[in-house]
Length: 282
Image (cartoon, rainbow, N blue to C red):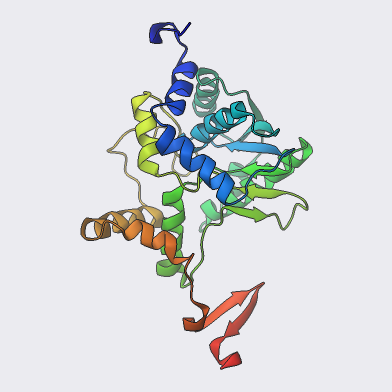
């Protein structure tokens, strides 16, 4: 007998919506990325790394739904690293996890204190340190993979940022072998999911997540449209939105550009850290 919505918990409503209302926009591209990029194999133990934001919380629910399909056995561990959050920010993560029925495990680090005196590149250093801690804790927990919540819009913004600000063409890969933790792999199962669909899921479910709760931005909630956010990524996001007004296919074209690289028309490229020029074999 089906429950009336008034009898359902918040977690049950969210799970129902992922199976029905948001199946095409969220679960289908999630499953497609896992299949197309071969992100999961039987027997994997995946550390689902949760920052407290909308993307990682959705990723956790999508993984739970995938596990319910029981196509093949794999294990999940939902990891939250506390790098020095304020008490209210950590409490927000814990409350959202309880509300959404996600059995998180929180471990602590001192990353915020370690990067507080870094003048430039503190976000980059913080991200690298976070990943190292996550790999280490996941491996200690018996996991062979960590999953991060980067989505389609992150991918195309990264491609464009590399070109405009880094003078290089590179992509955010759907999976990577760790260079420092042998046998460990990073996967990005949200790779094909659009950010607008994630926001729609969040807002229609009246959910509130952290954006960046570090000591530098000191921001707690993502849902305020008047919140001032300035970064190179935001500049690129706005540029893509402007380009889309004249060319509705611009996002897909950026994404496909790194799938259709013609080496015969490239002046130079790097392979395994070695630089090759077209004159080498001209």
